[in-house]
Length: 301
Image (cartoon, rainbow, N blue to C red):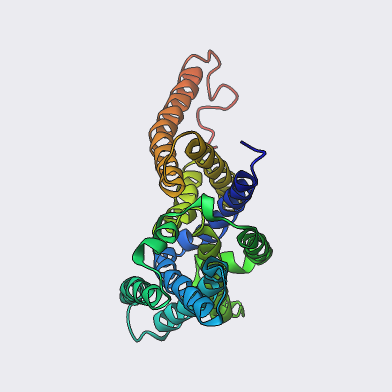
């Protein structure tokens, strides 16, 4: 299995997507923008179709080679439009996302038809297809993943301040507008590399669900991000290995594994916490040493 170049590229893509998607997902969850990935993902689909169209005009032999560059350009532009629209207050954020949802899908289907393809050609991008990860795709994924890691972790103090309290970040002199654009652009890059693994319709799950699981187990922002990265990478690899053994969609498998893990942790963690508290309470109750044995009855302490 691991000797196959196809599996090697798939594992590389799965690990990098699993590591990088929760980085930006941690900021999106903190800012209550969990659906931003969905909006950008639909725009990325238009970018894929634009790449196909440009490849057909250029006479390229492989239209798929132009897909990720097209998705990067379209998703970055679409993400910036969403952020500018939201910040400008001309329309609410959910309306802007809805426009991106519908416009992205519609434009993608029309443009792919103009490029000589069909809606079936978009299936791999909608739901993910590890089998289509080429050598060029792997290089794009490596480069974009490095950018996401450098920005998402290197600017963590500033991005965290912005995510916790935008008004405080502005009062502290941080470039709020530039940081908002940065988060949106990094989210767009994340969508661009994740669409090969889980597809644009499921990309938000890989960005958000690992963070939701980590939040149940961690108390600090840093620990949440790091645990979410571990969960994302591990689940992506396990899901890919399962699809090698059983013929199934890798994106759907990975997302269902994440949701199942969230359900397990959300049930088990409170039970374990309650048992620990009961044991501690029992230990205090059976202690023969009086709690106030060293203090007088009238001691105000």
